[in-house]
Every structure is written in structure tokens, then in C-alpha cells.
Image (cartoon, rainbow, N blue to C red; front, side, top):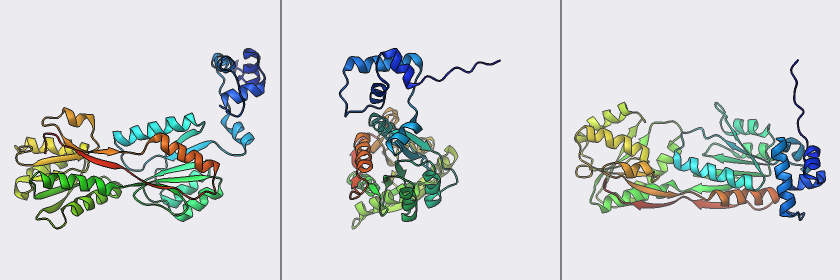
Length: 333
């Protein structure tokens, strides 16, 4: 017969640590309203580790009258290392504020339909990357108990807090840099991966704005993220007459640079290349890759915004324009 071990309880932790159950709850829930000595906190944490005890999130939510779950729908589009680092920082900061962060995969669901699926989990807050959520979806989330809905993307939705990502500025920096380097026939890579147009189109618009009123031309270059697609584009390059390219980001820039070099195109003598994101790999290339350095919002600042909104759900929605951009010139341009 298989013996199922007993699940340790807060009472077991209290007995081992020599404190009350209330003290265990205060310590493990990181309650700041009650003063507890550092030595007592240490005993409780040591006892919990020894017993393998973890607090019951659902029970804690029932006692508090609301969930502590912050739902982060998994992005439906490819995200690079820069965004991944931001998400890691954000999750760490929310954890420090005693929220449980859950990433939700909603493959096949979009917009308001996805919001209904998120609402079933009764999160206290939802952080929505990209576009697609509408006012109806926001209403569904709030009726289900979400005290804060925060969008991260190029536009805002009524009733939400918003971090507006200014991708036009990224393209503007790249276009102005290439023009200043004497380039006049500039290509702009538009990724072929579905969903990225929400970022690539504003970047293209930023390049066009930077070159408005000049003698420079802008050519759109659709490109799938494959070696074959890059090789095909590189094979047609000489006939295009282009003398520069903003390749959307560093990953596309590295893909295209290698294909151009395989075709005998010299960088930067024949073609200046610039990416975006300032990835470490770009510094390891030869020639080293010029890039647009992007400053994402602080994960700590966003976590504090979520906490403020949860504490004051009736407050005025906050709107912040983020995504600072600056050119780092290296040998490729």
C-alpha cells in the first residue's frame, strides 16, 4: 500500500518554530503591519523550509477577500532577449510585493475572447502585452474582480493603465543616423513573422519621418526570419541600388549581414547596416553591429504601478510613454 505523506500545515510550522499560527501567517505573508523580530522571522522561515511548507495561495486569497494573482498573458508574437529580461525583472519585483505571477498561454484566443479566458482565473491584475484588447474585454476582466488592467503596447484602451511603447522613436533614430552617415537609398526590413507588424510599422514610420523633406528614399524590405529568405534578398541586393538598411532589430540585422557578406557585399563600404536592441552578439560580429539602444520601462516601476492600482482600483488610469531610444554607432554603419 502506498503511503501518502501528510501535507505540512502552518500549525506544524508554528510548533517547530515555537510561535503562534498568527505569527507564522504574518511572517510568511510578509505582513508589514505587525512588528516581528528578525530572529523570529528567521525561525519561522527555517521551520517552513525544514517541513517543506508553502502557504496555500487560494486560502490566503479567501481570507484577504481578493486574489493576489497577477496574470501575464504569454505574448502571441516572438519576443527577443531584451523583452525577456524585462519580464524577468517585472516578475521578480511583483514577487517582492507578495503577488503570485502566472503566465497564461492563450494560443488561438485573441482580444476580448482571450479576456474571458483570463477572467476565469480571477486575477487581481492583468498585464496585457501588445494590441488587441478592447473596452469590452476590459469590462469583462473588471467584472470578474480584476482591480487593475495594464496594457503594454503602441496604444491605450479605455479603462486601462497604459505603458505606451514609442517604436516610432526607434525608427527615427535609425533613419537619422543613416542619413547623417551620407546614406540616401535606405531599405527598412519588415519582419514576416505574424504579429510583429504592430512594432515594425511604427518603426518604418519613424524612418520616413526622419527623412521627410530630404533627398533620401525609403524602400520596404519584407523578410522572413530564415537563412533562405535572407540569401534570396541578398542575391537581389546589387540590383536594388540600396546603400543602407535598418533591419528592424539586431537579430534580423545579423541574419541579413551574413547573407550580404556571403554575396560579396561589403559592410559598411557598400551597405551600412543598423539594428535595434543592442544585443551582446552584435558586438561580437565583424564588423561590429551599429544599433539603436532601447530603454524599456523598469520592472520595479511597473510592479509599483500595479500595486497602486490594486490598492486604489477607482483611481484615475495612469498613462506613461516609455521606450527611450539612442543610437550606438559601431563599424557596420
